[in-house]
Length: 77
Figure 1: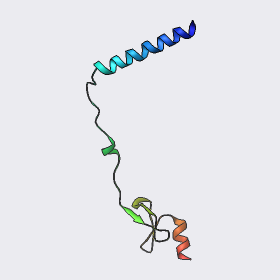
Figure 2: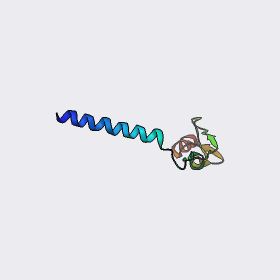
Figure 3: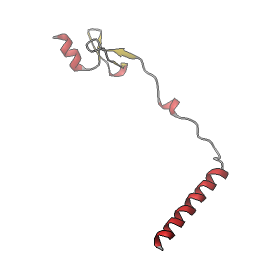
Figure 4: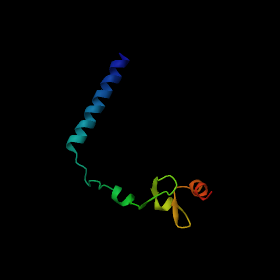
């Protein structure tokens, strides 16, 4: 009996949610905000391994781009 009551309540809640979604329009549609949050960034290729990394994370040593300080150190040896 208790399970039937819970099941009935769940069905009624789903129906009310569906009716609300169908008949109530969003007063102000949300604009896609990912354009303002994401910015493209230039990529540089690591001289040691060839992996492309964003310019902001590149390590420059003697004008050569590296994806990490470890690769810069290993290439200098």
